Structures are given as structure tokens and as C-alpha cells.
Length: 292
Length: 126
Image 1 (cartoon, chains in turn orange, brown):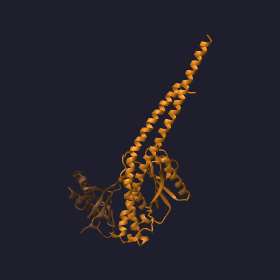
Image 2 (cartoon, rainbow over the protein chains, first blue to last red):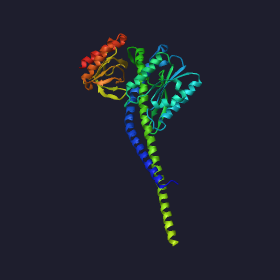
Image 3 (tube, rainbow over the protein chains, first blue to last red):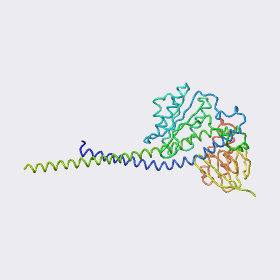
Image 4 (cartoon, rainbow over the protein chains, first blue to last red):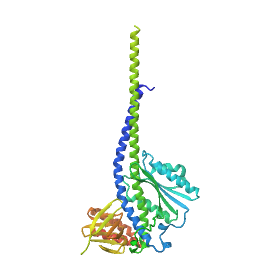
């Protein structure tokens, strides 16, 4: 049985922890709102871009001449994986979920005898992956000092990826990120960005075949596809940022609630032992008086 | 009579403009293009220049992609700025930077063509 003093100290420390988690939750909630807005604002761009590429690919007659970024270089030997994670911890399972998904995928690729190259974005992901797959990491990026991630950062990574592709350093590129569904649910996701994974949907209205292109399709595609890579990375950034804040908010909310429960339990304990000691003292006094 | 059609300008960050217009002038890669209602479906991309929406709203852009279909004009660009928001000091800096870039011998003809247009447009703005 801990002494009354010990209990008092513990209650105090749990309460101050609760204060911290509560403050973190508030901060995360405020940031989440902004990040969510950004993510939603960013969606139309990537959707429309995808649409345009889809329309373009439909009208390409000669598939063999299509840009390599679109159809791939025909090989499937080396995979480049871009893993997006947060720069800060204390956000629940956010970082581990994405790393778990990525690691499973990495093992699968290595078992299949393919080569693996990794670019990590965000320091937490790097920390988790380096122990097992440290040799495969070719680059790590972190935008810790940037307050707001803009398109330029995504473009930087996009250009790097395209440069590597042009040097034939890899054949396929995948991006791992958390998709923001709502505050409670974030879904870790893999998306293939090179070759562009635009599915041809035959059911769509066929009037798109009437597009006029200026200059011709190939030139537009050549201009568009690198942009699409950067856009997809940017989209992943935005979704990831929103997910991180959402995940942190839920985690901190849970922590605050747990701390509250703990304080309650400890207070009951404290009161009980306080009462016990009073009763004990009373009994001592009474029995002392009786024996007189 | 000219008809109105819907115009949207979208950057990766947000929707910059949404509304109706009867006439939009675009700085397309191969020259200026004016879009009126019932234009044939078109996909093209932009060079540095000014986008004019009915002569009221003007935007500066460096690159972009344009799709027009079913009386809907969509402009996607990562480097778009409303003309009123641009400070002349900044524009001068941009011109200086572009002039430096154009002196570099390693750039391709395509880049030189784009930079020339960029400088011309920025000079217009001041």
C-alpha cells in the first residue's frame, strides 16, 4: 500500500500529463482543420489532371510510341518506393501503420528477387525503416523546418524521381502514404505513380474522342506526365499532413481520457487510505480510553 | 450574341477563380488563343503569359494545362498569380532572375523560348 504522500504525488503528475495531452489535442485540432481544408482544396487539381491524362491516353493511337512515364519501360525489375511519414511522433499508430504496410511490401519484393530502392520522406519513417532496410535507402528527405509544405517541395521530390527514372535507375515507382478518410480513420495506402496508373474506363462517355490537341498528344503528354508525378506526390503530402493531425488528435484525446480515468482511480484510492488511517487512529484512541 | 460559359482556375493548393465568362484569352504554347462558348473540345498547355477573363480579371501564369469541353474551361496551373497581387519589386526580381537564366548556354531552345516570353510578359506588367 503506497503512502498518502506517494498517492498525492502520483495524482499530481498524472494531472499535469493530462494537461499536456489536452493542450496537444487542441493544437492538433486547430492544425487538423487547416490541413483538412488544404487537402480538400488540393483534391480538384489532381482529379482534373488525372481526367485530362485519361482523355489523352484514350486518343493515343499508337501505344508503343507513348511516353515511358505513361506505359513504363517494359521491365519490372527494380522498384522505387517513396515512403511518406511524419517528422514528429506522439500521433498514435500513424507512423507505424505506414511503415508496417511498407515493410510487408518490401519483404514481398525482395522475396520475388526484385531490386528495391527506397526514398523516405519524414524522419520518423526513416528511423523505423533503417534498421531492417537501411541498405536500400537511397535518399532521405525531411521538411522539419518548413512550417507549411508547398508544391515546391513536392516538385523537388517529383523531379528527383523523374531524374532517376530517366537514368533508368528503376522501373516502377510506388508511393506510400496515409489517406485521410476522417478524423478517426486514416488508411495507409500504396499508389503506383510510374508508370501512371490511369485505368481506361470503357463505360465513360465517348465524346472525349473529339478533343482537339494543340500541339499534338505526345507533346502534351510529355509536358503533363512529369507534372502528374509531382501532383500525386503533393496530394500524398496533403493527405498525409491531414492524417497526421487527425491521428494525433485521436491519440491525444485517448490519452487525456485515460489520464482522467487514472486520476479518478487514484483519488478513490487516496480517499480510501486516508479514511482507513483516520479510522485506525480513532480505534487507537477509543481502545486507549477504554483500557483506562 | 455571345454566350457565357463556366471558367475554373485551379492550383494545387486551391481554386483560384470560379465563375462565368463570355471570353477568355489564353497564352497557349503555340500562340494566343481566345475561347468563346461552343468552342471545340480542346486540350493544350500554356507558356508564360497573361490569362484574361473578359478583360476584367487578369492572371499571370508560367505554365499550365487547359481543358475545354462542354462549355467548361478548366485551367490547371501551379504558378498562377492574380495581377493585382503582384508587387512591382518582385516582378523586377523575377525579370532579373530570368535574364540571368537566359544567358546560361546550357539551356535548351524550348527553355529559351519560354524564358523570352516570361520576360516579355513581366515587362508588360510593370
